[in-house]
Length: 177
Image: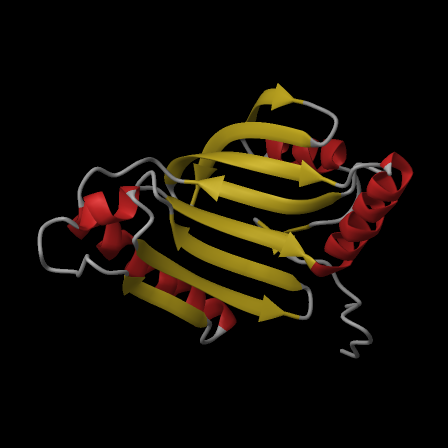
């Protein structure tokens, strides 16, 4: 596959569905796979369903003008304890490594916190625990992260439609100013 100026010939896939077309058509495709649409706006759809055999919320983000799907964010349920949260993150990371290869990981605690001192969830809630791995592919970027709320998110950003999003966003800003 040839890549020029960050453009790819193909779209990133979520649940084996290419991230192309409008957010509405993408949401309808996921609905056929068992997801339920719980919120619908011009540039954001919120769905619930199952992903990787777990209940989840999925947010579909569209470009401002053309409503093209450019980002999918999967939010897994909140976990209240560090050990199972980290185990889940590491297990998912290994699954993503199997599919996408080695990613770029940033997994550390910021002072005054350190892992193993029984205050990991406090560190997480204060933004002092950082666990994220991302994979940059010609089609786009996939990121796995533990949030400050104690949940794992998986984000898919399509490269082609991210460029479209940036262009449309710049036009909106330029028109406003």
